[in-house]
Image 1 (cartoon, rainbow, N blue to C red):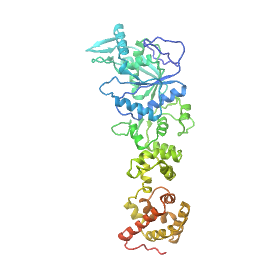
Image 2: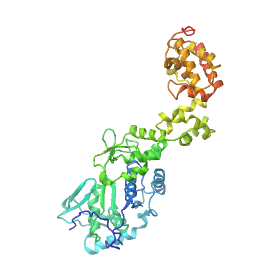
Image 3: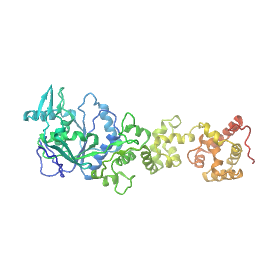
Image 4: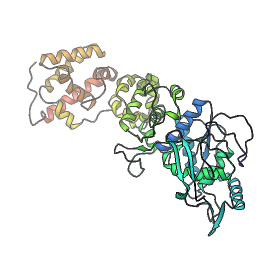
Length: 469
């Protein structure tokens, strides 16, 4: 009976029969083994990352193994999406991808071996593995410690379906042996399948098992397991919202692991250096969109003007007013919005007023254009036409105008901001005015003044503003 104790050393690659090909312990060899049956999600990406981090940390290898034995669900499009995910995240793998659909002969040979030895039997056209009635199947998990399953609780299980295809358990046991996998790092949801794979390895003659690391569940803020039915779990969705791949990798690394010095946002090379599967926490890891966007914001702030312009360019070019903008123009506006941008998809709305006529927000207009807003606009039109057109000069000019009406700068600039940007909040006003240019800015101030005269003051007050000059 297999004891199931995990070896602390790495097993050597075998020919599928459990026999070592060499006495030299190889370097760690991990595998990322996704099933191409849907869009890559956060859990898939986290599993890929943790395998990659540990392999690179140890100077080992990560194999990409595509578990595409389910012909009904596995499609070339889904395989391509997996490859695109890895490329976007910057996670390379060693060697060519391994496709389980091309390895059926290995699985069939293993099943025949079990049938010949009496360890498997036919059952209504399918083949079942015979689980011992007594004893336990156990293994060590670097995240969860010693894990034991009484054999009496494990039913005989199918290893070959009636359609002739091998099951998930067979493919895993055979491939991990044949590929020389030393560490199996995967989600906690697969923990209960592990004793079956361990039993099959033993039936193939293996005397050890890989080092297992079952990663914690990823949960939402309600502490419920992330579900594609109620949560946004698609990695593509976050890419399309404007999360940088570097930020996503950094944040995913924190879902179950934390650096010993508690510095969470750091270069990938440092994460690789510090990462160890032994430091992974068994408790569920909460996915927090606010924290992800905060991490993304830090990465955006670290970009220089040209880098930030390049990052927002695809989102800007999707807008009618942005189709013809070059990167040089975007580099000029980068300092205005970089500090407060958390998602790249937010950038176009924040700079649209610089390149197209703004749409005036009615609520912002009503709040900002109450008296003495009309007189402030009049004075700004006059003084702005003569002042040196720099952010500092415009700032000093509007501050002086506000003082004449007994207003602090924040109140004095409110009607000017709405007239220029259409909104009550936005990028720094005076730097925006400088970029916008004198003629365009004065035109918008005049348009706002004419609108106010046509419609009367907000809040039901008619006529011009009540302030004095």
